Amino acid sequence: MNKFNAVTFFAFLRVLWRTSIRSGRHVVVITDNAKYHHALLHKDWREQHARHFVLDYLPPYSPGLNPIERVWKLTRRRCLHNRYFAQLDDVIQSIESDFELADYRKI
Image (cartoon, rainbow, N blue to C red; front, side):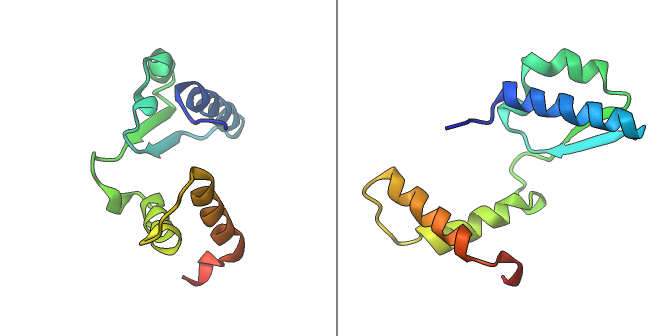
């Protein structure tokens, strides 16, 4: 299973930065306060590019400002609430099945 961490986030930032250079635009990436968003691995790089490429962090504990939190809440209610799962694979199957079948635009 692939994981999102400081290394993968740094790779994402570099790709986004290269794309933004071609367009000549300034970039502001709004992100939450996950530890890998503040990683020392890319701290110097972020400071070096801060004039045209900025990470702007949401305030801690602000789920109302982070749209993905609505997805997680809906997913828990539709797929996990009040159900027993004997194995992690059962949880994954429940969520994947729901995402394949649901038209979330109507919700």
